[in-house]
Length: 159
Ligand code: PNS
Image (cartoon, rainbow, N blue to C red; front, side, top):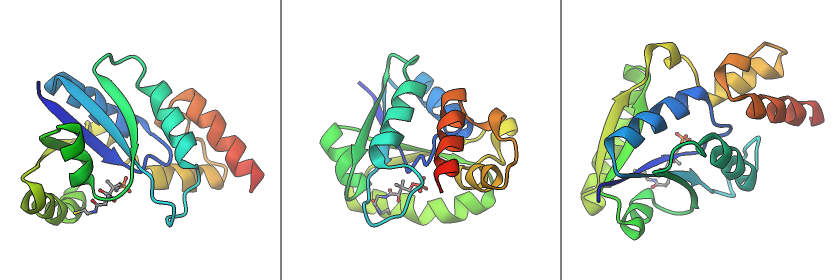
């Protein structure tokens, strides 16, 4: 069975992430969406909230499951029996950032990284931009699932 891991912080999940997850699910028998749970990093959403939103967003794919992880992504992949990491590339700047991580991860355990170019309609979408635009009152409805949009507005209203 071919198994791949899609790691990220998903704070919150966007249609850009879901585009990559959907395409990974068509390439591999099983895809594990791995939510980085690093308590030292400040996030808008707690790990449980990010996991919950991803679980809802991925419910339609039978070969996708969502897990939290701490520590090295390579160890998570080894523990899960995953031979590949899938990452989306929006622009060459993403490649510059991702290449050394892919090479380090391969050097550590031999896990491969598969890069998928994001669909053209999603190439400018990121969690950080969505949060920034929403914080200033911009309309980000088209970039995230509806239930994520509702939670995003509610969280920003609390601050
Ligand atoms: O969505 P993000 O913030 O780009 O996700 C980053 C993430 C969680 C994928 C990355 O920080 C990661 O893999 N963290 C686990 C720690 C690790 O393995 N670091 C070494 C990478 S070479």
